[in-house]
Length: 616
Image 1 (tube, rainbow, N blue to C red):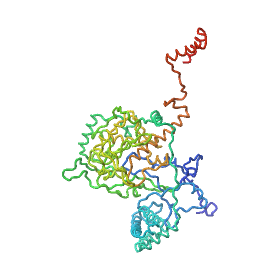
Image 2: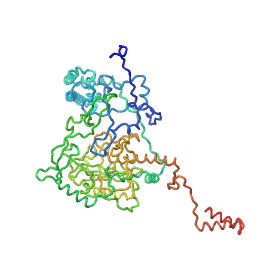
Image 3: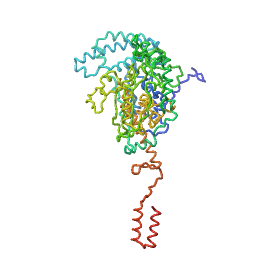
Image 4: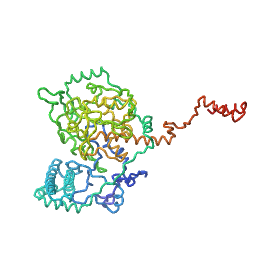
């Protein structure tokens, strides 16, 4: 392209900032105070990423940060993570994020060398050969201790990364002959003996730059400077969540009436139990007690769906081309396929309190005169799919602020189980099978490393609710994350709540909310709900919500102290408060006698008594 004078026009580099690099000042857990800092910061995660948003559903994949998928990814032929001398010092200071898990699906490119289906087919062929050679290496290392020490056997995720890196490298740098080169790779690895693969892996291990481990960022320590009773007082006076007006978002302030329940039951009978699948949106029919003719619990056969949420991939700055949304579970474009996972049956749920009350109605915590009633309790519930919708299958309660376990039981739901939603609930069929019937004095057996915890099991959700009611009173403060889901699962109405989705609201307001995982990472530098495949742990989630509440208490108390609030003899006193002298008649009489002994009884004594009374 020619410039104004006919000469060539040179490209002008545009500085796009350093937001993709962590701020060096935060590397050691510190706080950056630089105005308009060019680097990225932890606190910006809540304001810059919508992927941390949570709609309250426990059936979807927990949110994860967006993943950049443009040409700046390391390719398969060069050393990964290489840096220039100018950035070495910053690299030492800034934590390097661990590589995120990926599915076996071609990465999105601005200009792909072939159709997605072709790329996916070639990628799977290459990955299959990597798996075969890796399996043979694993078998050989079992017989050769020296080979085993070299650590040449790759994990399933490392094999996926390896295949993705190679495919992406050819797609970017060899686009014209991409297909031929990838086919040659498939044939080469198909003919490759395991010894040659081991030699290739050893060479790659020796020449590759050592992977940089993320710097350990210390978790934030919560220190309120208050006693437990004082923390509860701040929580009660300043942080209890008012739920007035929040009924549209799932909170139930009053139980449904008998008339509403009768009308809801009539609607269910009229619909003949036809529901919409919560995963694939297909219409199907459920059969409580099983279909007498077919033995089915639900019609419609298997459910093909995407378990992950959709997200919008990042684009390079200035790129205005259309990019379709993708699924986090498999990285497929939205609409590309009906699903990547097949469930055993369709499932459904409802959030309508009137419909929920048709199975068992809501109740408020009754009066409780036990001396050990908890003043504040963190609790979390896990739910699974049954013929009656989503039902309670585990409930955990911990005391606050110390986090001691008060209750942790599995629950046998009322309806026949369609799907335990184990991917997110963390409750598996073997857990229910191993569950021990609840007794008051039961002691859990010693848990071996790597062994799943054996839990007690109660016979119904109503029994689980009664157990929780035995620990609390109407004055107890309930703490949790997305408490409307837990309270609906327990069919509870409670006026004193501290909900972390309201303590730490999303910038766009309800119904969008920040996930518990994101809140813990941003505010406390702690990671929970890691992708271990075992699902969520309700005990971990309950304590996490409690820690976020304590952090809020710490900040609230610091602000209150600045305003002049203080505790005097364990009582919270407002700014400007001064002690008043309260004397009884005996004290006043003693004052009169003292004055008579020290001054004249008619003049000085009377004067001193008047001054004393005035002061009193």
